[in-house]
Structure formats: structure tokens, C-alpha cells
Amino acid sequence: MKEVFTMTPETKTRVSTASAFPVLPAEDLARARKFYHDTLGFEVEDMPEGHQFMIHAGHDTRILVYERERTKATHTAAVLMVDDLSAAMTEMRHHGVRFAEYDMPELKTVHGVASLPNGDSAWFTDSEGNIISLTRLHH
Image 1 (spheres, rainbow, N blue to C red):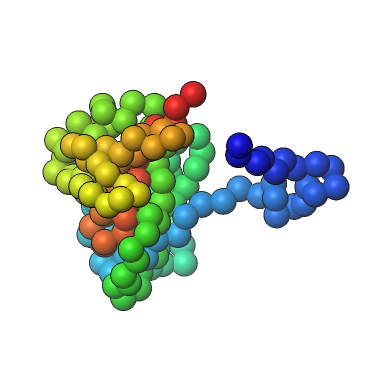
Image 2 (image 1 turned 30 degrees about the vertical axis):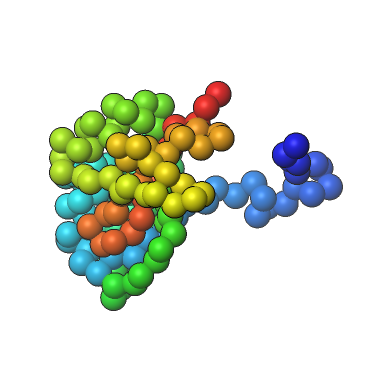
């Protein structure tokens, strides 16, 4: 049985109620901006500090992308929640996005999709090598 830890008045803090967003590195900011705007269709906003931009996603969420030398992460850096995984993947494939195939004991994909206990997920890499997941939760 899964244990759930909920906030109580005693455990609630300013940090526990703060909004959060992923921060992704980009070796080539122009290439990353083009990928997120032109390929994935996000609204992007250059930040006044320079060398970074903000992606405006659904439900008033954001992703900050900042310029730095290439990094190598082998984990999921951000998750994009969708209500129709198949349709989202079809749109993205139409724009040239390729989804990863995994065949490991703990994770197997079929046509790019892994069926997990809480939902279905698919992974792709952005123009900068960051691993991003599309996920549709089971309700």
C-alpha cells in the first residue's frame, strides 16, 4: 500500500506552498528557443537578464532555459502533462520529434510509450539533449 504524506497546518510552510518550475540548460539558446517555439509550439519570452528565456506552458506553468556549456544528464529533466498522449505524440512526430524506445527490466516502451502503474509516458530529447517526458496519468 502506498503511503501518502499530506500537508497539515503544522507542516505547511511558505516553501511547501511555493510554485516550482524546471530549469534546463542550453548550449545554443537560439537553437533551443527555435525548438521549444517552432517545434513544440510554446510561447517563449526572452528574460531581461539575457542568456535565458522562459517557456510559458499550460496551467500557468513555466520552464526556464538558460545558456551554458553542454551537460550530460541521463534522467528526465522535465515532465509535460497531457490529456491525450497519443494525439500529442502524433503532433510532435509531425514536427520531427523522435521518441525514445527503452527495453530494460524496469521500463519497456512499445511505439515509444511505457505503460506505468499511474499512467503512460513517452520520452524525447530536446535540441540540447535534455530528456523530457510526456505523461498522461490514469484517473
